[in-house]
Length: 169
Image 1 (cartoon, rainbow, N blue to C red):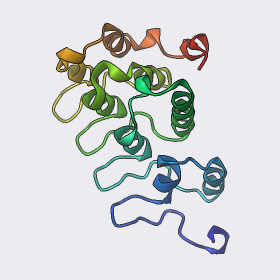
Image 2 (cartoon, helix red, strand yellow):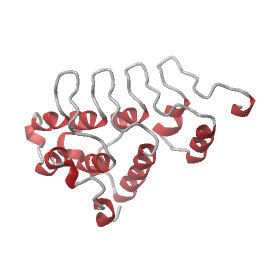
Image 3 (cartoon, rainbow, N blue to C red):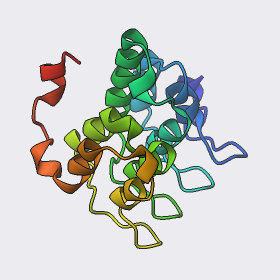
């Protein structure tokens, strides 16, 4: 269909494109490669300003509570999306993926925080309310974990550190 001239960047009513469909649920890596050949915009934003990575983060389950096999599969999917999406994009609220994770899960998803910081996400970005992602961790005192705050306050310690290979991910 694409070879016959179909619009690979066709925008649906909710502001998403086909890229969202192939990356949000069951990632079809073959289809992604086809879309790359046709210059699909992987950084397209929906009506709320979210790119596909932000949307994925907003619907995913907390990685820390998944069984090892499911967690590894989710980590692989996130790593794959990170290879071609602007990791420091902000939505209409000025939130990055780190803001979204901290708002949703508090400290509970430090695995995702480490993955994103290791892949270049900048925890120093403030949203439209002037808040850092770490501000949302602090606000969740009942679910606070020092390691998560350390990841966001000392990102150079985690960037390209080989942390994942150390854990066997």
